[in-house]
Length: 113
Length: 114
Image 1 (cartoon, rainbow over the protein chains, first blue to last red):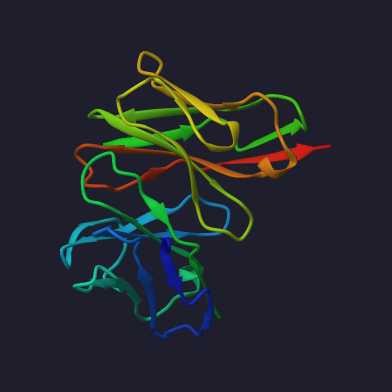
Image 2: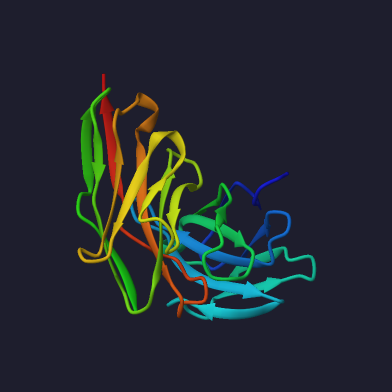
């Protein structure tokens, strides 16, 4: 059983460009969340998707947007990249419901130059 | 509202000695609490979780944590450190009103010396 898979693993973008990161949740999971982890910090919640809708959002600007597909996979899009967007982006999946275990992918390392 | 405070940013232990990582939490509602570990350049791996069952929770790799409501603490321990335990550890809280939003602590970097 594959866990949470993310792609790409590493990428380099230029300021002002746009990036799309992808996530496939663990089998049987219907809820996907995205987190940003800057170097030396704990992950920060970006948003969560359930039933193809954004259910909750953290304190991130509208440049950060997402999507969830009918097969529960998800994309994170970031527009107008800033140097400060350089971070590890983590995808987490779970079955909806309080207390269910949340699993993380290995992450996508984004470097903005 | 929910938050966690990890009381130590760095912990250094000798191989074979006990490990203690301290975490205090704040939550408006009944929380679930987790400890995750992150090895260098890796994603997050769940060590253990507390979800209002037994207050002493056993996890993987010999780790355990005790939920103390009166002290609002959820400290992580291991009786004997191994070199492979060197990593970043995160205490995480989620509450019933948060719709699955995890709130992470700032992390504790564990160094294990031979």
